[in-house]
Length: 456
Image (cartoon, rainbow, N blue to C red; front, top):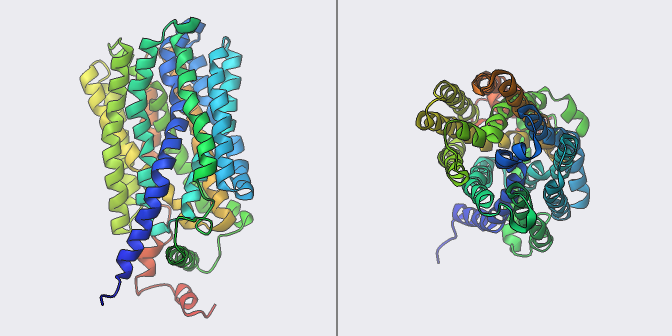
């Protein structure tokens, strides 16, 4: 009689969890991301129809993140109180209704208010999902798991860009609505319907998962407990579990600053890419959609490879710094070659490959540094402060476009912020961002060693 291989059994459990959760969460976030960024395609016609300047558009696109910033931390704390299943469904219903309400916009003030409220409604969704996954996967599996989930970011654009272009081209004038109004309406409906599926499909945690056996639950609980112990050792015996300690943790604020710098570059190009492509000489909405999807297809490949390579080598910092540098170089060269559609797109593809590749590895860090209530709050704090940059990136590009007639200067500024991520990430000690790697090393500090022997 052969003895079961523990490693194979453990791998089978996590594959089972991955198959159950990740595809469905990808589907949910796909529509969340689509409803957030479809404003970039709506701009192609909405701006002329409503006589909005580039500055008005930039402020409206970015003000989403002010609402997101203000309500993300409270939203994640409410998720802990009401449970992930209910709170995720509530978020999805709210953003679907507000996204569809964009069809009634006629003035800049209405535009600003609805985009702000959309940010309030969606606040907590992404960090909530990240926190939710920490309840199922230990940190040494987090980058590859988040890599699969965050794959939805490029997929939303790969699929959503041609879809948005098609809606704009096919629905103009139908039932008396403009094509940009149909864009908001059609893309909001799936989110509304999926919210009710969330209530029946998701479980709040491992304990409540009836589709796992008791032995499978034990494997996950054991790994999560081991992860907490390693995090405790890496933090020199200071349990990072309270909100007070989380707010006083300088590394959490450093993570937020890094994410802020990253997002200034990322969201600036994200919201303006359709307009940049159109300026380069492409006029057909569907063709713009196809071209806008191309950089994200390249980015998706490098995102999966980088996250898996990071987990394989238990290394985080270089897997963030190098992609950030590549992204900055790509953005700089795309602005320099803006007169050529081919070369501009080639460098944008390089920029997105670097930019997207660092996301899952980076997003795994707050859950590694913190635990308990502090993990939910820390993930939300880092994400909300970081996403505040989503206001500045599009706004700066819009203002510069109105005042210079070109987006090139803005792209250089965005590239500089993206480049800043590389040196900042090395201010985080390797022992904190790679607890498993350092827990396995024989040479440790006396304090950490005493913790492992139990002599605290």
